[in-house]
Image 1: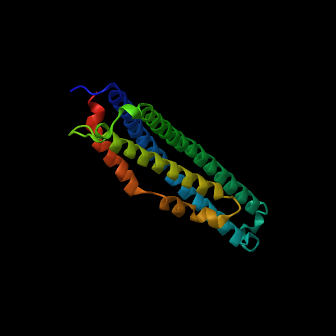
Image 2: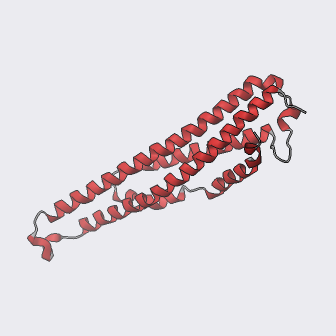
Length: 203
């Protein structure tokens, strides 16, 4: 039995959204993997700056180099600025992923609302061996959109709290960044993509 036109167009939009989610999940994972060593570098640079502050160069054999501390501090600060700049670039990539997913999900829900009058409860809850129900798929997309929106916001907030003069915050930044990971939710999204894999292929 052929499906009504509103269902077909909704299925088409859902396929597009899940394909976009799959592609964006890969980008997100790659960018986060690139952020980890940068966060570690940031923590290390903060530790080096603290060590430099705790050492009195004037009472060491290095006292013959009067500008040494100033030069070292400058080099470490420059390196820190470079790392923070790279992290901000990565955040722009994460923002692009978040926006892409949000736009796709928004478009699907807009289409659903436009056709809501011609979609009865049986139609939106009907599922088969290869096709999950429309209601399930809409819920899964909402879950994914919420996850990436919250993840982006938390990571952005963490980076905004970092200041070059606050060494304690910089030293703890790698651990706090890692604590934001949500493997269970990422696994849930991977599971969702498995559930819709046949649906995506059945054009």
